[in-house]
Image (cartoon, rainbow, N blue to C red; front, side, top):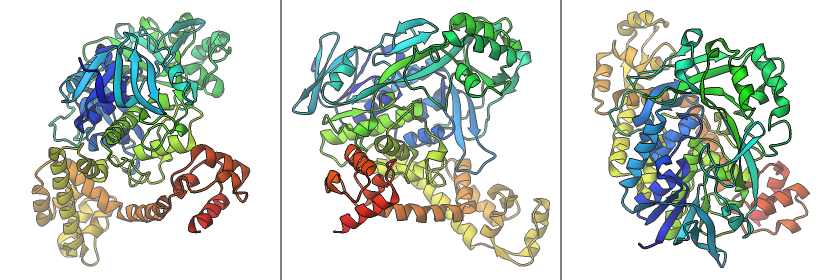
Length: 624
């Protein structure tokens, strides 16, 4: 067997799967190395994909030709579009998936991609020559040679799990940790540190009193994750449930804090602020008498349930005693307790925007090793790392997404520019241009770029072109079609909006909040004919056209702002200045600029500690 590859990907989690698939589909000879082929794309925590801002990332992965959206649609057991009460910039798809089917759907895809091999083993050492990675060694003493390597080891690097005072080495429950690899990387000058995350108790559904819980049903409209015409509609869905903690629960948890690894000094590393453990919640919010919990199924054919909101590293007996004080869990039986896990990560400011190391050439980092949390953030990074690993092999141009192009662009720019002081999680609030980065238009933003690169295939591109043409046709019709008041007023009153005093363009009527394309089309035969001409994905196309019409002013205003900032992105400064000797910069600015070494003025402006006056200094110097 030949152990020489263009791209080797270490780790088959969500980042690793997307990285390996992207590199191989672009034509690189690729090898994906994983400890366990039966745990490919394992959903270590909640078997759910998407959510606020995360759903947008999955839509972007799909638009670029990745697989997370397709696998999610294929294995969904409940689908919902979150934030419907807000504007479309905030709409976020979320799906509960069948954990086991998700693994096997991914494995089937990977095993059938040309150019992609899978090797089951554990990597212990990277091989670096003259500052460039050239291969790696495994615990089976196999030596691989590679032009590029993508590290996506997740929580496995020196992983250590905590349940009260019990410490278990491992990267996931019942799975071994990865040793020696961190040390192999650090000795070349890359800095690492420790982070912490956690996961809740898993419950036997046969022991739950569902009558004492609220029911949360899924949605069965046309929405899904992939833009591809898969024919999937989530018509058959499982229920989720919700309940609340109470003061009795909180008191048991408080009494057990002395045995909590988070509060007794046993865990020293940084945990996620936005997904805190239940013990952290009762300490941080001492006045709250209850916290909401969500009980979610792990699959179609299992009794295993996930208790969202009850992440914990407290001792087993405390977790069970506290849970039994919730009426629905009075007779609870569990499969295993919640636990915390500590693991190594690498400072992402040591990376380029391509996710290549600034220190070791052709070594890429993606996923939780960069200090992020979440399958979606990992998948987005993995896709970009896999693309750029391929580009490096074949002397292609770097593939970088801007902050005005994608949430993935925001994610990576935040990581390499600002670094992390806690596990990074994506939120819509992190994006300056979230009206431009909606879940409905990720294909419009990204598929053509990916098609030009060679990753998105022609069938995906053809669907985009057809959708874009049909949306443009609908918008043009609405902009040009005149409506006479005497012919439409009865319909307007029926739809609950003010009659016209004189005729107007159809687009002006559609802009009213009570009006949708479909309800007004029922009263304008010519417009109904236009909508009936849509060939593919009618509901998706109509929604996209309606959003463009109703939010045109907001979209155009945000584009103007983005264009102004884009000008600063064109002013390259990397390697042009000796920051240490620019005394007109503040001391903090000099230190930060030396550390980050930003590519452009725009990136420099986003570095914490860089003031507007520092940016003005750089602008003046760049003109000279």
